[in-house]
Each structure stands twice: as structure tokens, then as C-alpha cells.
Amino acid sequence: MGTQRFYPAKVLWFGEYSVIEGGDALASPLHHFGGQWSPGSFESAQRFLDFIQEQPLRAHLDVDALSNMLRSFRFHSTIPMGMGLGSSAALCASVYDQCCFHSDLDLTSKQHDLGLIESLYHGKSSGFDALVCLIQKPLLRTTEEVMAVTIPKAPLHYYLVDSSIQRNTLDLVQAFRKKRKSPRFRKAMEEMAALASTIIRQIIDGKPKLPLIKALSFQQFEHLDVFIPPVIQQLWKSTLDDESLNLKLCGAGGGGYFLLISAQQITAETWRGYDIVEIAQPGMGAASSPN
Image 1 (cartoon, rainbow, N blue to C red):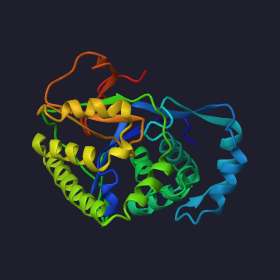
Image 2 (cartoon, rainbow, N blue to C red):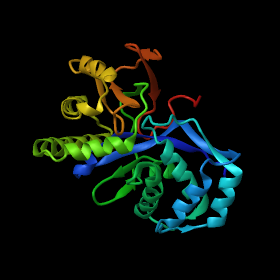
Image 3 (cartoon, helix red, strand yellow):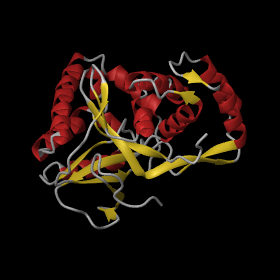
């Protein structure tokens, strides 16, 4: 059992919520944060063990190996909890990797299994985030399949903007499903899904266009404002008239980190009063060393 393997955080670049409307999603590992198993004991080990044994996994679960690991090790992680970077996804990916025989399964089957495991934390999960933490490559999710992709370098800079607010993904998804009852909102989300899918294709081709990213920023600010906390709304509004700066959700929103995409590099560790972390472009590895 290779308990020393490092499982990175993840960043969802594009596709939050709009993936529900048939749009694509693009995510990649974020090596700035991560976790691995170290000697200790796992909190709520029996609950975790009982839950996983009840799930209809496509991979074979080694129950003894899981039981022994939960008794003898704990998952030490630097991934901030409740901030949208996959703290539960990395944990679930590590358990699946260490205690399930999954090497012969395709990505769709692995995602299926990881979604079942992560549902312990989110009520219902696609498994996509955890799959990114497991595979540790940029992944594209479409309505038909999930696949690893290669992303060329582009002249853009990416930053995580810290709202300093923890949030609960399950509550946010429930709020989104409530808003979907409005035909006007569904139409807006369909347009947003098409726009996000176009941007993703451009990124994979190495030719992202800032005007389209700006258009997505405007649409999220207008239609997903309930997922933008007041502490971020004023900052977001101040970027709408600046062609070189673009703010967007980074996952479910509601708090946690938000994604800033800039045409110029920002060298300071704070920006307009907010703590920021520069991260590598999709598929480019770590921009800076883990703390």
C-alpha cells in the first residue's frame, strides 16, 4: 500500500453549474495544496468504512486493507476545507486508490465509483473532482464522456482570490436547483453553458480569448449573484470595465476561492485588499511550492 503518494487539490477552471445544463467542464490538479496518509488514526473510521462497503462500486474494495489503513493512518492535508479546492475529493481519491482495484477500469467507471464515495460528504457527487485528484491530469468532462487532455501554454495569469468564507457545497447545489425552476434562469444557464464550452475548447487549443471570458464573468455576475458573497461582489463589479481582469466562480461559489484571470502578472501577495495565490495555468503544474 503506497500511503506516501501525494494527492493534490483540484481547480475547476470552467463549467461550474453550467455542466448541469449540458455544458462541458474543465478541471486540473492543483499541486499548491494536497494531502497524503501518515501514521495516526482516522476520525469517524467506522462510519466511513460502513458507508463505503454499502456502495455498489465497480472496482473491487479490499475491506481489510481499508480497515487497517483507517486504524493506523490519518489523511494529512493542506487543502483548505470548505474553500472549493477539493479537500473531500482528494481524501476520497486517496482511499479509492489505496484500497480499490481500479487499474482496469475506464475513467467513466472510476468517476462513478468516486462519486458514490464522495456522496458521504456532499449528498450527491459526480465524482469528477475526485477523479482529477486521482488521475492528476487535466480532465475534460462532456455529456458523453470524461477524458484527459493536454493544454498548451497561453499568455494568461491565474490567481485564487480568498474570500475568507467557508461554504457548504450541498447547500449551494440545492440553492441552484431551486433557481432552476425559473424558465428565465434556465435559459440564461443554457447560454452560459454554451459560452463556457467554447472557452474550454479555446483553452485546449491554446488560444483562449479574453473577451469571451469577460462575457462569462458578466453573465455569472448577473445570474449567479446569489453565489457571490458581498465581500466579493464589489471587487467583482470593479473588474467588469477592465478588459485585462476577469473574475469568475471557482467551483460552487458562496465563499471559498474565486478565480481571477489576468492579462498581466500581479506580483503582490495581496490585491485590492484580498489575499491572492498565483496558480499555474491549466495543465502546467505548480506555479509555486506548497506551503
